[in-house]
Length: 178
Image (tube, rainbow, N blue to C red; front, top):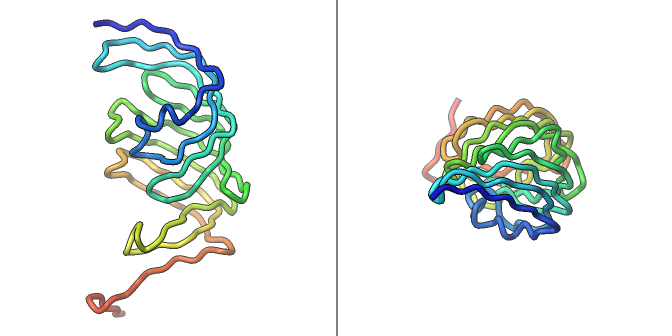
């Protein structure tokens, strides 16, 4: 069956979209306004339009970092495009995001994102999240993420800032040498 729908979002709860984004983010809160078209077929819908986020909050699952946004995004055929998108950490430090998130394969989205940050929280994990390294990191620099989320290429050119604490636990099975 072919779809040809139009939707208007007015002060819509972002939590409604949590099931579609659960591989990327959690704790999704806030509101969205926008106009969307939904075309294609029921098994493979293509969503296009725009979204304006108000008091949006979410946590990046892998990093456990909570962020806040009041900005807009363009959506074309299930691809979310971000242009000079302002992202705020819990201390109101700002990062500028450019790029896209391809949600055509919702179980393993493709990301091509470039972030320029200044004293921005980039990590907020515990040993339960990752036993190889964990902690809290604030950093300034360029962060590039490209590829499918299950096998992403990450290129970071940044320096750590004050209040950064990274833990690398050593146990009896590990050795250190020159």
